[in-house]
Picture 1 (cartoon, one colour):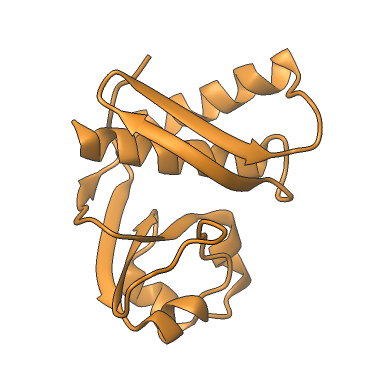
Picture 2: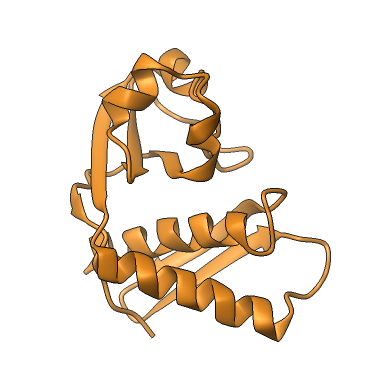
Length: 138
C-alpha cells in the first residue's frame, strides 16, 4: 500500500506542474495508508475547475498504469538531471535512488539536460520503489 501512495504523490506532483503550472514546487507531503496530503507553492488558492482538472489528469495517469523506474546513482549525477525534484532543505545520501514515471532513469542519466525531463515525474527518493503507477486513493 505505501508504494501506491508514493506513486499517487508523484502523479499529483506531475499533475500540479501541468495545472496550475510549471511554477508549482512541492513543499512537503504526508503519505499514510489512509490519506495523502500534498503541499505545494502556488501563491493563491487553486480554483475549483483546476482541482477537477488535476483530479482528471491523475485518474487518466492511474488508468494508464505508467511504468515506474528506479535506480541508484551518484548524487552528483542525479543533480544534473533537468527537472529532477528534490525537497527543499532535505539532505540526500550518496548514492541516491532516482524514481521516475514514464521514462527510464537510465534515459535521464544518459541525457541529463534534456528539456523533456521537466515535464515528467522524476525525483530523489530514499526507499525502494518499482512497478506501475496504478493505484487507488480517496
